[in-house]
Structures are given as structure tokens and as C-alpha cells.
Length: 168
Image (cartoon, rainbow, N blue to C red; front, side, top):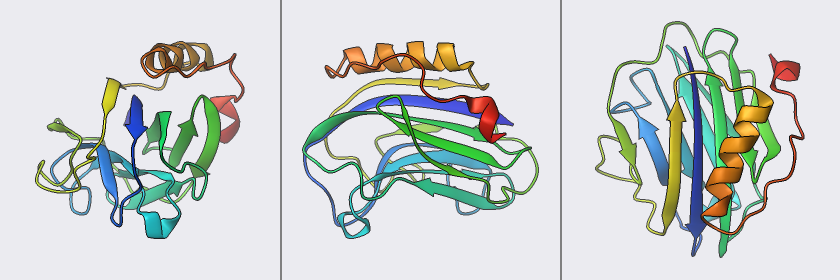
């Protein structure tokens, strides 16, 4: 019931609607899964992560990630402890402890640069590196993956700054 996603992206412009970095599953609104988005310009141009067991939980870092700029966006999703952590450029951005319901993430498709069965929410600008891992990484391992992703977009990720254990 745990997934970690790390992606390096370049946001050329902010959009009037949310833009998908990725979505696991065909529709987070009705099925277990996760997504990672660049939020809409109207929502102050941040990033968001959502997770669903039988209920949806969302963490958003608005208004802290405007375009144009490159970012390393990471999220750790855990249904059993209702934990969702969003990180931007290797630093804690936002956490949610909203109830995610019960269950496990499904064995489903992963849509890159789009959501809802790959039919909408196109990211629209450059994406460089992705890693989706079916477990929670240690802080040092997550930091190493973020450094790897940051290398593709010229972002230097410093040493670990946040202990995942502290939030659940």
C-alpha cells in the first residue's frame, strides 16, 4: 500500500488547468491509485499529489513553484497510515494525513504526462526522469534518487533535510 514517485520536469508556462506529471490507474476519482500534478495557474501554480485507497487525499504546495523553471517533484504515498508527503527540489513541501480509506494500490497502467486513461491533463512541457517505486525509501535513498533526477535538469539536491518517519 506504499508508492514513491520522483520526477524531474521543466514547467515552461503555468496553465489554466491542472497538468499531469503522471497518474497510476485509470481514474483516481473512482479507483485506487496515485497522481502527481502541476496545479492550475488559478491555484497559484504549485504541485499536488493525490492518493486513493477508497477515499482521496491531496497535498498541494501552492503558491511555491511558478514557471518557467525546472523542478524535481517527489511524493510518498501510504494508504495504511493515511500519509502523503510532497517534496519539491529535495525539500519538504506539504503533507496530508487525510483518510485515504483502505486497500492497496492496484496493478494498473502508469500514464506519463497525462491522466484519466491518458486522455486529458497533458503536462505540455518537458519531463526528463521518472522513477516509481513500490515502497517507501529511506531518507538517504530518496535523496539519492532526487539527486539522480535533479542531474537531468541542473538542480543540485543537497543532503537529506527531512525525516519521513516523523510524519508517519
